[in-house]
Image (cartoon, rainbow, N blue to C red; front, top):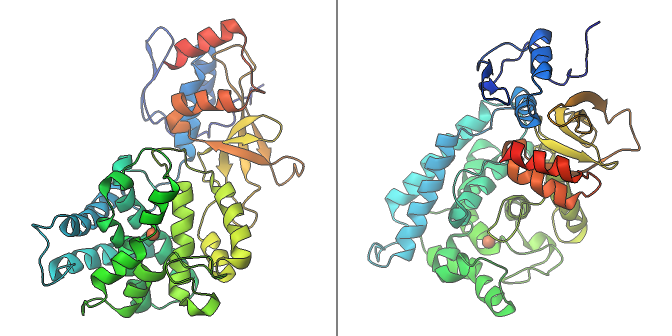
Length: 395
Ligand SMILES: [Fe+2]
């Protein structure tokens, strides 16, 4: 009888990399088709579970929506605009954003829109391609991608989307005038520093308000993207419909990306947690319709992502259902067998209504994330011998 304990590894998929046994000999070459024979070979050799996990993850992983090279080019364009403002020698007195920089960012928008229009998939966590120092630039590009997808879902026409996306790409331009020491501070800002930071929308607007080559919608986004529907935002404490709809759109995307991206001082918030917080805000502070449309473009649990269930079990998302986003199919990974062996069973959260996902982890960051996992989820306890073996198997 065929042992189906390792069913989680999709038969017919190919291995993403060479797999070695514990003594270092090559067991399976990269590009080998996964068969039952291969799985039993892996089991026989007790391949450590890091290999298996990365195997399952790679087999399930969807391609990023925006290729890495395009992300890098887009981020560099934002960097150029910011650096020309930050560097007074470079800054041309006649215009805060010279025409060639405007052309540069418009090209980025066209390219992102073309890439996104050719894809049907949903957006999941945006790629972290740069170091944390470049947060503002990376964040600007992420917000732009999310804005394009949400604006499309909201029915804006292409010409409008281009303008709104340009606003999204430049929305934090005022930060170019905030002291770098504050922007790069490794830790939370003090109340006084927050006051300074909150000047960026007004500083940005003052910088570009007289530019003839930027549409008013872009200027509004730069100026008003921190306003809230209940009047609790800044700089002008506008209320409700006083804030243009396209600004409300960028605000939601801005907040979502800020929460779900890695910062120097904290881990990214899991997508479902960020959405829960935004949903609460969407009642009074944010535009609920924008929130609804934005969430329709986001994949909560992309296939290949690690998940932790409410009963403590650990697994990897293998099938996402857009119609019931919190109820994907999960390949459970059971570590309770002899160390080095992994048992994989499929669990359909649609059928197990009492279970839910409490956290996620990145299979590609296995070493780091799994260590965190052990620290934050003490229900998975290793005895001393296991700990020792575990440590040596992942380091
Ligand atoms: Fe901002």
